[in-house]
Structure formats: C-alpha cells, structure tokens
Image (cartoon, rainbow, N blue to C red; front, side):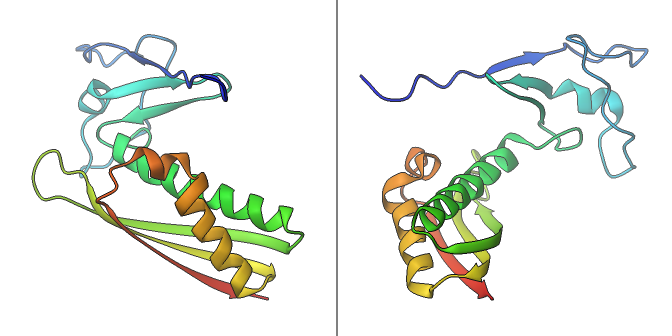
Length: 166
C-alpha cells in the first residue's frame, strides 16, 4: 500500500502510585496541584500515560487532570482535523482567512462504552470568505479528507455550522 507512512504512537505508564507520591517513571512530572473535585495525585497518576509521537509528546489522563482524557483527545482530533482541512482548502482557494476558531460539543452514550453518539462542530471564520466557499470546504472535509472522521463509526450524528466575521 502506498501513501503516508504508518502512524506510530508510543504510550508509557509509570506504574501504580507509590506511597510517597514520588515522581512517576519516564521522567514525567507529577500532575499539577489538584482541587478537591479531582482525584488525588496518586489516583490521577494511576491513569496517566506519557504519549510520544514522531515529533511531539503529551500526557493522556483517564481522569483529565494532568492532560486530556482519551475521549477529549478524540474530540480535539476531530475538531482539529476538520479545522485543518477547512483552512487548507480555503487558503489553497486563495481566500483571505485571518482566523479560525472551532467549538466541538459531543454527547456520549449513557452506558459502556460511552462512545460518542452525536457531535456538533461550529466553526467561526474571520476574513473575506464567501459562505459558499466555507460550505464547500466543510463538506469536502467531512466527505473526503478528514481521516479522523472517516476512522470513527459512521452512525455518529455529526452536525456542522459556521459563522463568518469580516
């Protein structure tokens, strides 16, 4: 198969929390100070993973205290993928875009595996861009280019909207 090279992601778990709450393995810092509504440092570290890709690293946290949870990361990946596509399509079409903001809100199933069942993505674009160009860019992202969307279950309801600001 030709095309892009495989995506490779490495995860490392520092092990269960120690009694002295010492720094986790792999050189990670302990999670930031947590308030009473969050898990304790030991509980937070219990589900904290160091994630490394070919060019970056971040913390993935099952409690969403020291970094995004896996589901938050998936939501960010979907919003990011579609936003990148929209900017790429508009700038290649020589439209003057000064800024783009995206807001994704997703609902999850009430029982395990609590997957996404519906999501709403709202994109705000600042610049001199025709509505028809934005509609086309969003449609192309959804129907052809967004690999994150096409990697997800297609029975998820995805609604998109946009706003233009001159």
